[in-house]
Image (cartoon, rainbow over all chains, first blue to last red; front, side):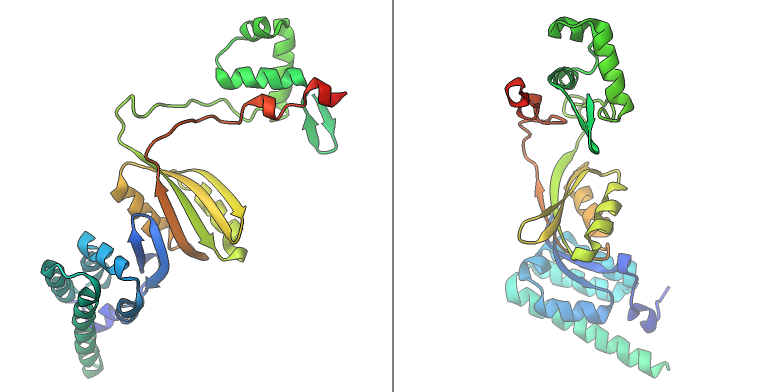
Length: 112
Length: 169
């Protein structure tokens, strides 16, 4: 079942947001309530947090289960398989998410 | 036991009875009386009064989870909060079964310190990420997982707190 771009791009409830941690139980204070916000956080969040969540598969689970975007979840899984760390990981992840966000926004505005 | 203003003042004997109850709350009045050279009726009266006045809040059981093979981890969370939300967050924490103790503290910043018990690290993380981090007013969280416990008592040992006879004079 395909999910509409507007649904994927929506703002989720506070309890459904993505909360960025750097390790078990260590919350950075940063969260994302939408794909747009998630994309922007990728640029600025502590790199330890990106590495922590990517290799726990947290990003792909949130994207698939909360936002409902199976396609982006698959692409994020692909990034994980590259086993990047540091800024190479940040850049690759940002590219994948921003490309998909642009695609969804295009579809979203075209469908209006 | 006397009432001084709003506080209840325990005498030396009350404190000694409390100390013995903390060592073993299953002791009989007679056993406590024998150890303190008191009639069991005196011990009974004093314990009754302390229970009625809620000085003794409850009798509990400390379970050794290791011994029964229950997989668990204990963690100490330090939660940094917006000052005006601190009280509310502390109250909310008391409602979670995973949280066994909650304190507020002020040093450089207002923080809440809470003890959490979970079956493993994955459950601990999930609990903090899904139940604690989303609470309004939570700014950030630091969590330390306990690796070894050296002491566990419900209260500090009584002699440090009890008014000694010399101080009472």
